[in-house]
Length: 370
Image 1 (spheres, rainbow, N blue to C red):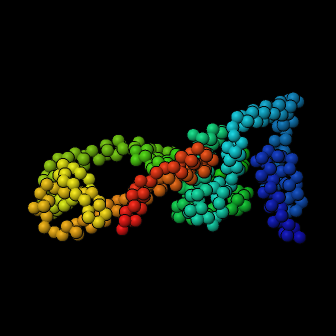
Image 2 (image 1 turned 180 degrees about the vertical axis):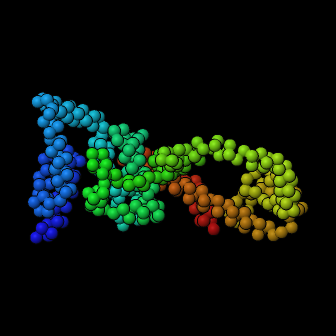
Image 3 (image 1 turned 45 degrees about the vertical axis):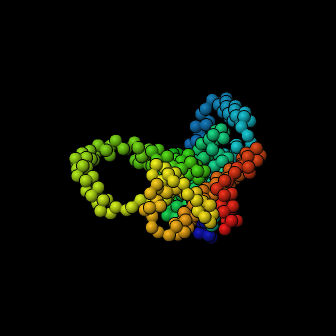
C-alpha cells in the first residue's frame, strides 16, 4: 500500500519545493507532512528540518520585526503601484506577461507547431510594442531581449530542435527535485535554458524592420560575454601583421599579373546605355515603346548589327529595371501601412496610402502600350 502512495508523495514534495521558493512556508510544511504520511522519505525530512530552522530564526527576531516587514512590503507595493500608474496599461501588461512565461513559445504567444512565418509575425507585433524607444516600463528592455532571443532560437532549425529536447516545465521540476540545488537548495526557472541570440535584440529588430545589420557592430558571445566583432579586430591584425607585410611587398607583382590577365580577357564595352554619360552622349529612342537610350558618337559608323534587335534589348533591360524598382516601391508602401496599423496611427496610415509608386505607374503604361 505504501508503494502505491510513492508517486503522490513525490508530487507533494514538488509542490512543497515550489512553496518554499515562493516563501509560503506554511503551505510547504502541510504538503511535506502529507508526503511523510503517504510515503516517508529522507528528502521530506530534510525539507521539514530546513523549514524548522527558518522558523526558529524568525522566533528569535524582535517582536516588531514582522510588523516592520509588513510595513516595508506595503511601501514597496505602493511604490510599484505608483510607478505602474505612470505607464500605459498595455505596456505594463505586456512586460508582466513575458516575465511569467515558462518558455520561448509562450514568450511569443505561439504553439510548438508554429511555422517560421507564424513566429516572425508574432515577433514583429511584440517588437513594436516592447521596443525601448516606445515602451518605457521597467523591465521592458529585458522583455525586448527575451522576444529577440525567442525568435532567433525558434527560427533556427538546429537551435529549435535542441531547445525542444529540454522538455516541459513538469519534467524540469522533477529533475530539480532529484538533482537541482542552487542557492538555499533551490533555483528559479529560466526559460532561456542557455539559448540566447548571437546578436543583440536591437540588431534583430533592425533586420526585421529594414534597418539591416550594422556591419561593424554585430555582437557575438565569446568567453561568456557579449562583444562587438570589431573588439577583436586589432588583436587579429596584430597576430597576422607578418602575413600582411609580406602581402604588401608582393602587391605590385600581383597587380601586374592581374592587369595582364584582364587584358587577355578584355571584353568590349556595351553598345548603348540607359543613362547619359561622357561616353554615351548621343540620345536615341526605340521605335516601339519610345524608350530613351544613349549611344557613342561613332555609333552610326561602328555598329553593324540589327538596330531592331538592339532596341528590343534596350526595352527588355528598361522594363526589367522598372519591375525591380516597382517591387521595392510596393514593399516600402506595404511596410508603412503595416507599421501604421500596428501602432494604430491613423495619420501615418493615411500618409502611407498616398505614397506614390512611379515605377509601377510607368510599368503599367508600357504594358498598356504593348
